[in-house]
Image 1 (cartoon, one colour):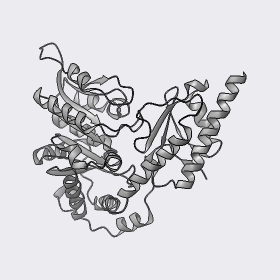
Image 2 (image 1 turned 135 degrees about the vertical axis):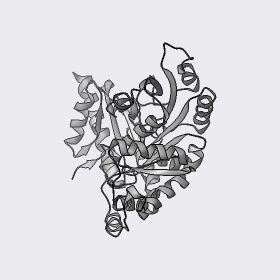
Image 3 (image 1 turned 120 degrees about the horizontal axis):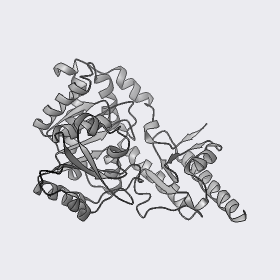
Image 4 (image 1 turned 180 degrees about the horizontal axis):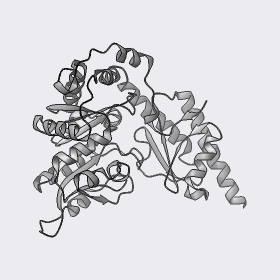
Length: 351
């Protein structure tokens, strides 16, 4: 059986979650009559300290709707250069909203407060208008780094002082909560929009909830219609989210602990290199450049031993723990990753 550490999107609904979905009380989401969807949105909004929420099919749509509500065509948004918005959302902001993206170079997805402030364009008739800044908490492709709360708040305050809106891509925000003990509401306080994903570490088959003020959510709903419409009896899906919030939050702490286990085994492996923030949440990234192989080569070597990791770019490997992987499986996967690094390094040294 393959141990799948490719992503926490690989999770499957548990039997309890499937039962909750089957028993969900439903109505018509479009007419605001689905009680389970309403309950989920209210619960997530409360968790994030926001006035309201809207249930979306995906986190990608949450990001896009938040951008479309808070910008206009010709504007510019500021993100990190390894962010999901910049790399893997099919340039939706540009294609649909006519909004350009200014990516800030980062080693681990965490740009500095000074770099952000320097990226805000002064008003000029010939330049895009800096309109929105996004913080990805935790980071994804750069290895699950956790933003410091003070830095997030300084960026938020500078944004507001300079006329920008501030957004949190909170796909794995709850992993940060479990790692730091800082509440989701404290992270989100004062931000103009924030969302959490249900289909990653929480284990739901689909969905995310985008939150903000009541007025923001009205406009986000307008974009939801434009992007595809309501989901009708969405309570079947929302029930999975409620079940996850009742039963899977503690699992996120376990996932974080499992990635620390992997990091402990491979941190001193020859030929591997890590960012200083490695091992903070449920994602671990490392470079295999020192082994003289590509990331794809290394991923194939691990898969030959039934351990699936993700190759990103030429030399980056990403390992992600989640509720479908047990401690015993994590231990075996860590041993395989370490053994393959040792083997490939020895082969390079002897060649």
